[in-house]
Length: 204
View 1 (spheres, rainbow, N blue to C red):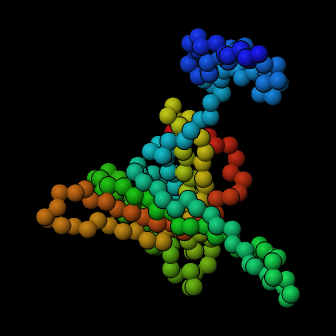
View 2 (cartoon, rainbow, N blue to C red):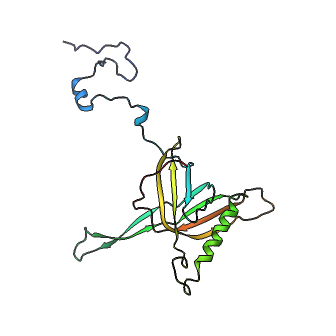
């Protein structure tokens, strides 16, 4: 006897011809029933262009910045090799290294002079501690707080650069033949951001 052929009726999109539209009990047991997500259950994504930087020293506001690079931490380890062991090795934890962080922006009449004034105050406390004593004689660094926001202005995450000190300030390359915007950069060295920093806070 010739076996019955599957029905040639048109099937819904995504379903093979002759396949039953009703889900099997086995498939339901394996995959379960998928529930639709509400908008509030989707993860809040940080926007790379929405961030704020605050320097907690002398109550100084250094203005707005357009770029931040160098949020990086490396966990170094040492490889220990034993004699006669050709396949196995031991990794011992070593130093935890934090990269320098560089801020970048175009120079403006309002913000750039404040940055120059702050650098002048840092330079005044940078040297001379060999001959003076007291807490104000040595530059102790500061905490630099970087907050990342989502598209609604809510804080997604933040990083606090502990005891950050300025490493380098780079001014613009001036060229009378160019029509580009003057850019300034400042680089910070710090003691890390992997520590207890409390709540993330709210958007400024």
